[in-house]
Length: 603
Image (cartoon, rainbow, N blue to C red; front, side, top):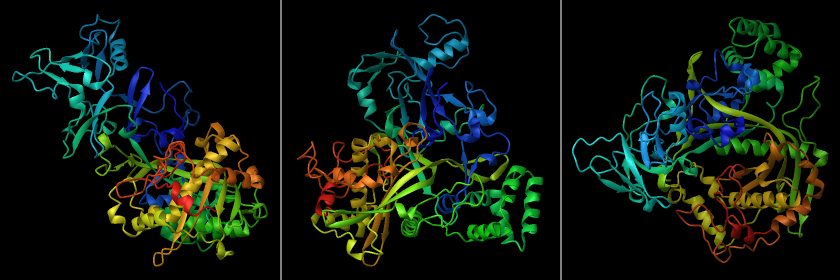
């Protein structure tokens, strides 16, 4: 049994991922097959209608429960997995085999084990490290017998010989019946038939459906990073719907009732509706009691704000709304008054008196805003498989699932994290002279990409958001990476503990843009919960200067510095020595970075 954090399930694993267990690799099943949600799971619902309705087509968000919440001992598993791959390699006898029978034998040439359970465990521990995958998201065992061109008709061996070790080109696989062979290096470089299998969606007892697929599959190592790349949607909870009362009103059953009936005429009508929801077991009595703590005016105002909340229709709009909320809070502070009820903690808090303006070298003024409280919602919307670098063909596999208690509703696995952050912008609304002025040949190349995205957007990892090509976005993104690295050196935070969020507001007609960045810690465990990030604000000028120090130098120069952005490339001048950071910290997978663009317009 392996233990992973719930946030790891989102960022690293998820349905369709291969988890390396103590007794061999296992495939993580889709949640409806994993047995983790029994009965009505809405008590684990995460409410954020901007993300749910705007980015997930109305689907709900569920967090994974803990063992304690389910009343299960910590030593017992709560999420089912399944053995995968099914082929194994016995290095003692150089035998590639597939165990299919319930007997005491694992390798056909090894002596019997004490029982069938131990035989299955041995076969799992000896699992072969290669699988096959296609860019449509399918995954299956390699058809080891099928990749050999047999010398006899109807040659179907139950096991194969494995000769050699080390490099793939030094390994040969042989059929013991007809003695036909294939070199593993050759097989690894070829396209193969895709079976269309999705092992994470196979119900118990339904066999192994292989409907076929028009895409070509490639052999890939089961632990390769490109075997499964998660597609994450993230949203910051922003005013006005950022209180605990708003969170309660956004519970699916309550929100659906309000959308149907509208703003109630009086509070008695509203609570009568809630009582019916309790009676139908759509919500709990505890939820009703928690809402009842608030007075009538608070509840009716929150209902209006919930029903009138603007729903974004793209990732760009989602971030732009957050950007405007951060700009407003940096100017006026938030919340405007302290919570009235004991125990109520704001999900978004900025003290306007703590905002700092830093002048860098007399050229540019940056506004540094400490965000003392923030709440971030993360959802794994799907994943891609990119075998053999087939980036353009890679398709997003939807990770939505349904549950028996409400078959018509789709759900995604999500996580909510609380933390703190530092928002940095130019405050051009009050100081127009601070506007970012970008010019030069590097800027022109990125601007050409923004104006002509059809020549560049073929790379499907740039998720149809051509604003990531805008020079202002690249500037802020590059600056954010330099700051994260500077914080790791100057303040002791590991770079993996700090996440970035880049904001851009573009005038589509003129191409002018305002932007900013948010660095925040919202990570369970590790440095993300130590606090103290906003305590750096009074001395943040030192961090800024360190971030820009030696930006013109890289240990990989001249190779790094001479790199130019062009169609088919992710970045300009950027490498692990100067810009790239942990991909759990970068929402854009270390793409759209260019040190030379930052150099052209240094603050």
